Length: 580
Image (cartoon, rainbow, N blue to C red):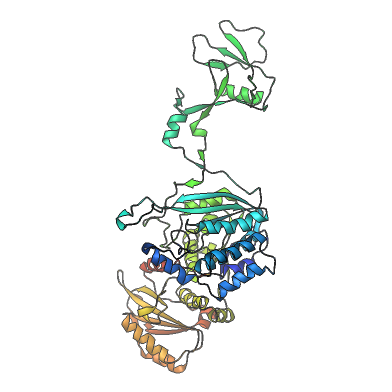
């Protein structure tokens, strides 16, 4: 992996275990689904009405089912020795506390994956987990069991103010406003890579600590002690100072080592360290500071050092971050991805805990903010996501920022490249994963420009929608349906009816199986759409096989409306599939 960037489409547990070697990653950041800006269901079913809808969304997604049970048994049996004894005992204990439900299923999912993340981190590597405070106390127990019991260290709980203050009192909520997320920072070993970051000084701090203004330059400065409580410089050096005649407020250094013939009109005074204090600087450094005019002397004659405000990097970053604003609706980087984080947030994490050329991993890469930040900061990266919509958004985002030539250098893994892999994706036993085949087919055929229909409901079997340009200001609709098996003639009649119901100008039927001759005949019978602007006619109902897409590169040729990109971005659903 040394010279490439990797984007994996699939279950991150399988990718971590089968694709990423031990101690090959310098930094991992994850923002798992159902954490930041969301509420977890309350563990004792003590759910207020204001949280009921979000709690239901959580329980609908994280289910105590066969996969959760298998994950629990893998941890407590520990047949492969992957888990620390602390982790095993913790999960057993949490089952007694949380019972068999959605929250325990979620915790088990994280435990399996974070264990693998700890394995792939280098000894000096770091890990950040982004969550909200509702279940962070349980997640921290998991992290302690995985990292601290294996020689790692808990470094910080960072609080990020993710939104501005707001008033919920009119809604009758009897609690404080929720405006922050949590980032847990752990290291795999005791000496992780860490580059101190700085934030600008507040004006009140400048006014109180940098009160002095240098005449002539107007540079603000403060004075600093040149001594310490332990020897650090030339302990035998006696610093001689002279008072310039007529100047009662300033002492200046005399650079000579010997004063056999004192100048007339100048008073000399030797200032050694005193009262158990020692010079903290060498004689050469002290003379250099004097040469630069950076020494100020007190009435006692003890020199102090000028620290100029414009030379200071700022205040070392603390563990409460209030200076990174959430994305607003007008932000250029906004993709309308529900839990998209600001690029500056990930830049701070990456700058703090890695260096240029290091490998950055995001195992839940979503819309690709971590990847974008890593590329911008000259790191190598590995991204993993189980939804093809996320992969499509990331590829489109990177192409927009870094160009098509760069995107072509990315190693894509898990995305169907032949009929065998497409068939395998379509026939996944887990229905939640099998539906990814439909999304992949629609987005691939439309070059990632379609809107995925997440909730079919009244839209019948329609899997995607796109808009194509019919004039300078007008557009029309195309609908897509995907079939992985059992295609039949009546499917064409169904999609023709859906066209009428949805007021669509055209439809595309994407099929894994080869269509029958009667299906082709019925599709042709739907007629043609005359595209005036293109000067070309298109079949109103097109049948496209997955084989044609993979082997012949067949793609949607009709010019797309610019609005479709925004529509597709808005339709992306953050509710990723739980990975056990």
